[in-house]
Image (cartoon, rainbow, N blue to C red; front, side):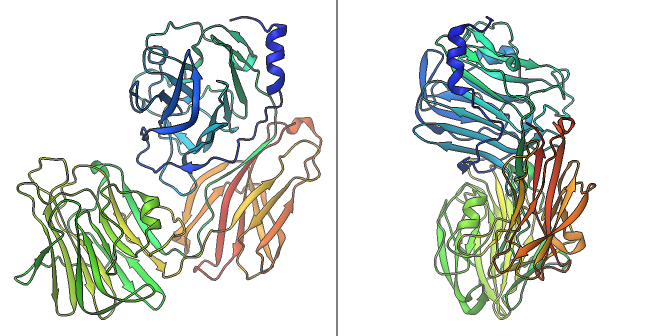
Length: 584
């Protein structure tokens, strides 16, 4: 490592304006698969110079690091939650904004995002957390520039706090970059001190848990080829960030995503009932169901791999938006409540499921009933009930001895829909179980459909997004203009409440109080205050004056809006959370 030189100081000048807040232009959400995951290859948007070569693609993992390649060459090594310096230099080219045992959940508002443009590629881990540690939620961001410059940004709560007890001892975190492929490991640097290195591998390591100390900072790496000028991050800077999601006032869908067969826990006898009402369904699991063995009138349907069969119903059945006289049955478990279909996709994906054009019920999985020994799919109508039955159907790409058995039951007169599980032998890839009304849906939180008893509503018309709170400006000392702005407040009462707390809460669902999908995100231990809301716009502002008191630097506050509604029994809806760090 070398001290800063006049030349290096000159190189720093263009980037001295780096700010703490993360760039909100985070781009596209990558579909959730699992807490431990490497996503499919993504384009950078330009040829990125790195370590003497250029790369066009990234392979992002949930572990706060990603690999570089050109169309998959060199090949990435998958997610890796044990950050080591040996792997940093021996593996493929790798950039590590915060390589540690972190990940994201399958919750609305959270995830890994990428925004690829010709001038900058932005990768964001939003509302991540350590393995086994629900709090704090934090965000990490990395920007790549055509010049080879790399920028890391961290929300104030960023930490390496995994509770995994296996090797290595303690729990490490590494921030840095390396061309890998057997590069020589140089000495570690102190990124927060700023400086210059002439090595193409640069890193700082935190070898024990809960020791990462750059939360709320930016780190810029300006490429020298070879080496980098790395800047001292700003200290004591003000920042604010939204996290979580306001509760959707009316859901028109529900689902549970099972990442891999091991997580599929809907077992024989489990019954999910959808009771049709005038404007939607009541969904519950407390009515015992009966699996009806297909009789002599059952006919094979969807016979083949990735195929669809449309069948006629004996009479019109009430559904969202009217009635249907047809069902379209896919061999991969999607059943559309119309003569049309949503395609034959074999890869369960939540955004796709919620955006399908046709209303669908699904136990969605990649089955292949052409495998020798597999059972099949049948359709039968008896006494006003239509039955679609998957009997011992094998998963694609496997050589099982047993498959999956379940049955959809459609009451043509009432529109009630019942799902009864027989013997399940999960195998192969992912599963998704649920219902989605046709067209884009407000994004509800995932549900645990195996846990019960539960009762909730899904409506024919979803209303969203939910109440939202966001900061206007940043909470700087002496600011007289900082405020918290709320929107999407129901058009009911011209006031709402903002609750303040000293810490985050990991989205406690208020369904047990009569407000399903509404979650608590703040400890709310610092009080609640009312503020006026403009109706019917549903917007309001709570001004928060920040005293010019240096002792407040580093103080963390959380906030959440609560408003009145008639959409649930509790009579209240909640917003997302906002976490603020007071600073200069």
